[in-house]
Every structure is written in structure tokens, then in C-alpha cells.
Length: 238
Length: 127
Image (cartoon, rainbow over the protein chains, first blue to last red):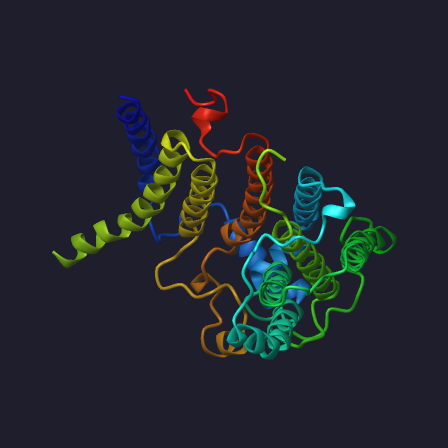
């Protein structure tokens, strides 16, 4: 009875959502005639003013940069909440929730792969303004490298102090670069560095600096999440 | 004939995204296990992200990246897909990660306290 009710409710919801989206149409440029679409303005500004080749990066870091600062704050809050909800006394820390040890293939393979994964992550966030990718994606790749190491070595540990230092420095860099814009242009996240030539590594003004800071911050935060959850001892009635 | 068939196939893209979203909603409302509810939450996220990215697609469009190859061969900005939904989805993915992480932490805490993941046994949280 309950399932039937739920399915009926979802059928109504799905019908109206689908009707709305089918009205928009798929694959057609949909904007009001006579008005310039905001996409064209963003794309033109991306090439002319900012000299960034990846338009998604220019929107995330420049046009919606304040939004990204909020997003990074939400991620920081999520990590803090995770740490405080899973709070444990000091002498209980160190018990792994994974009870069996990894095979020798995984241990020797991960030693080989770990530097390559870190290098790929760094490449992805340094080239965030030139190619697909960016700070968030590169940070996640770096965190997967640490996940591999934590799964294969039982006594591999990450220093919480180092993680929070990296995370705080990256956050301060983002906010500080944004505040420096007040001195030069008058608005938050205003560009004050030379923009260079399109498609060069050193181009785009402050955008690569901010994305590198975001990469470090996301990498450190996600590594902290993995470490906290992996060392959570599975016990009931505790 | 062909054109009408492709016309309907176009709508199948929206249909798939909405279906994934509805499956997630069904899971959150019907399933009893807390872990399955968390998984359903992230299924809703995936469906919504797919839906938002799909709005920005233009027929025959390229990625919104001014690579040297694009600048040499096309030079036409109207050939690019809309980058704004992609940037919004980038934000949404990160928020979805935060939601999943906090939800899983709460589930671990509930399991420690009650010794079960079944939502009926914890307290009548379900309708």
C-alpha cells in the first residue's frame, strides 16, 4: 500500500518535471529572441579579458568566484562535522576498520603507482585554466592516491597537523588573493596580475593561483575524510 | 521517419536523467536500511547533475575550451555548449560529497548507539 502511494506520488512529480524539460527542448539554443544569451557574454569575456581557455574554469573561479569560496567553506564544514561526530578519545585512535591485510601485489603495485597518481593530480589542477580539470578534480585525484596507500599499508599514517596546515594555508591564499583585489580594482577577486597570452601556462592572472590553492585544500580535506573514516573502529553499543 | 525517431531519442536523454532521480526518491522513501537511504541520496544527486548538464547541450557543439585546435579550425563561439550548467554542476557535486560524508558519519554514530541499521528498530522514524 505504501509503495503504491509512493509510486503514484513519484509519477506525478516525474510527469511535471518531464513536461517542463520537454518544453525547453533538447540540443536547441534556448533563449529569448532579441536578448543576448549570458553564455555568449561569458565566452567572449573569457577570451578577451581573462585570457583563460577553459570557460568552465573562468566561470567557477572568476565570474562565480564568491560562490566557489562558499563552496570551499561548505566542504571545510563537512569535514569538521565529520571529525566532531566521529570524535574519539586519544587512546582509541589507531584501530583500523579494515581487518585483513592487503596482498603483496597491492602493496608493491601501490608503491609504484602512488607518485604517478600525485603527479597526475598536480598536473590536473595546475593546467585547470587550459584543459579539462581544475582544483576540485585534481584534489580528488590526490586523495585517491592517499586512499590507495592507506588501504595497502596497515601502519601508513597521515599527520593531521600537516593536513590542517596545508588546508589552512590554501584557504588563506584563496581569501587573501581575493582581498588583494580590493587594493587594485575595488572588488573582491579582481584580477591584478598580467593576463599573458592565451593558451600559455602562465596566463589568466590570479585564476591559476586560486585553482592551485583549491587543489591543495580539496586534496588535504578529502585525505582527512578518508583517514578519519578508515580508522573508525566498527563496534556496537559503544 | 528517421527524423521523428531521433526526435523521440532526444527526449530519452531527459527521460533517463529524470528516471534516475525518481529511483533515488523511491529509495529514500521506501528502503529501511540507513545505508541504502544514503546511497539513494547520492543517486538523486547523480540524476539532478545529469539533468542540469543536459540542458546546456547544443546539437553538434564542442567543449567550451578555447584550445589551439578550436581557435585554428572553428573560431565560432556559437558552436560551444553552454559552460554555465557545467560550472553549477561542479559546485553541486562538491556539495553532494559533503552531504554524503556527513550522512555517513551520522549513520556510523547511530550504529554505534543502537547496534542496528534498520530504521524500524531504531525508533519509528519512518511513516
